[in-house]
Image: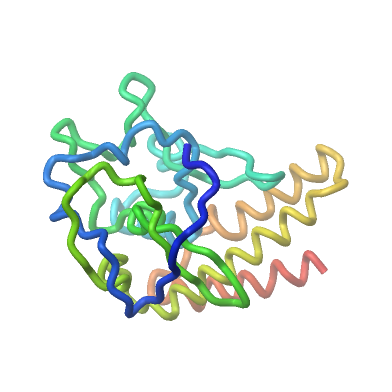
Length: 213
């Protein structure tokens, strides 16, 4: 696991960073031994469900599992028991969901920090084993359509999870379980309208915030 990070520099979407590794070229070290660290937000789950044409329940049975992060139950990619590799990694060491891989996978070897409703990116020094790298624009590296709208979603989700963590403090085990089940149902288990994920997500957020209040 990565230790506490003190980035030398922060970057924006239009900045160039030296992280391009020529499509990995046979390296898949970052797809192993990740434990429960590859957390999946609602957009990640929606992308997996839509592109694999599988319901969320199938994902939870086959490729994803639930874990607890500071009192909040969140899904994360499941590592295979025998190889400790991501369940979407092929025998040839290639990602089987590369076109719609989760946000944390897209981000690596970048990290991100949330501050004042904005996202700042930084390089996770020593995280990637590839020695030779070239420069690439942050937005191109992430490769996410409607990136500004996506960043707004990420900031909203980040704050929502923090509110859920705060809510869980002082609750009984039964109360915490009930809130977490509602949280999972609201943002993960209930299918999204595929025409506009962000609009649907915003409506759900407003509803859930009213419940929290």
